[in-house]
Amino acid sequence: MTVLEVSDLRVEYRTEDGPVIATKDVSFTLGRGEILALVGESGCGKTATAMAIPRLLDGGSATIGGSVVLDGVELTTLSEKRMQDIRGKDISVVFQEPMTSLNPSYTIGRQIGEVVRRHTGLSRAQVRERVVELLELVGIPDAAQRVRAYPHELSGGMRQRVMIATAVACDPKVLIADEPTTALDVTVQAGVLDIIRKLRDELGTAVILITHDLGVVADIADRVVVMYAGRHVEQSPTTALFDRPQHPYTLGLLDALPSRAVLRGARRRLTEIPGLVPPSTSDPDACQFAARCSRASSACTAARPPLEHVEDGHLVACYHPGRGETS
Image (cartoon, rainbow, N blue to C red; front, side, top):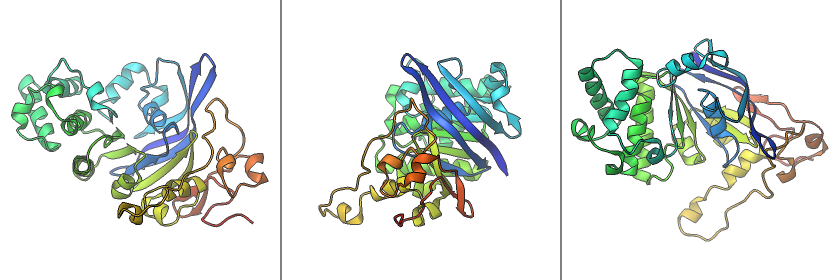
């Protein structure tokens, strides 16, 4: 069952130097209980795509185009008042940096409780009970006492769990997790991923996971959208993406991962993708990866390759997909 459908999403920022196109005609669907990963290097448009879905870019210098349908409701045409009812209830966000997202002046119990009060008719006692329940859900020990703690009294991993508890306070249909494991050690990272799985399994929450860590993607995601220069260049079930990557950029990302030999201490330079990412101020009708691609041909610079199926559920925007070189 499809809970979210994003079609031709485009995010453009107005700057003194002209328009900056952060996201260019991105489309994907998300099913109930599915974990979809958005991957790519910094600046590829992952966060801009995710923040545009609940319209968190409204009211600033951003212009958003396209369509976002949540459970049959078109979000792009709703009033801001109606969107405030949807944010935190039907669609929630776990922001990238919990220390700057949490208010240092308020206890974590008050901050989580604010979301519960905003979207439910629970009494003060019921709100407190719900907050304790949420802290227990995300694995915070001594939850009844922790509700009185301030953010600076918690570790980075605990603060991230508080962010997740706040985001799922009203059992959202869609959870957007923006780099939820960044700067966490491996053990804490595994715990955060276990929480996301638990929410998916117990609540049926659909998750959009933004990350640059392909190890996390392999561990938890059902499907993957690979983004480059603001566009989606490949979409695939996770297993197929790792077993049969098609786009040269995806191949470059996978080849840049440390090999087992490197992890065992052997000396080998990591494979790198040559060249630079094109500026976001232009949107040529061509493959924007062509200048960095070893298999690029005249077709790649003459017209932008369409996103097409190479197998069931596996789409790629490339005239020369696969591992082989073009002739």
